[in-house]
Image (tube, rainbow, N blue to C red; front, side, top):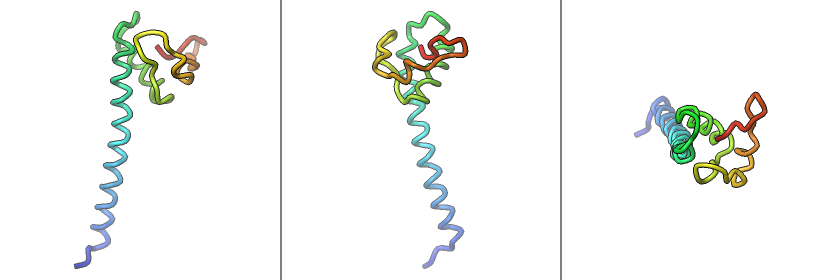
Amino acid sequence: MKMPVVVQFFIISLLLTSSFYVLSSADSSACGGKCSVRCSKADRTHEECLEDCDICCQKCNCVPSGTYGNKDECPCYRDMKNSKGGSKCP
């Protein structure tokens, strides 16, 4: 039995879409877990810290270990600046 082209296209599209979703959600959950640790003892609000950390993690694909310091482990994270020239990443 031959499958109609429309059905084949639908199955291929569904498989590709689901694989992209798995890849993108895996990245953000990895950042979320690392950022939760990083921001657990933050001086500013926890939500602000998580938001900035997630932005930095998404762009740099890494978060330094621990709750403070260790930024040399991730130069991209270390070197990101906010609009005022200060460190963007917690």
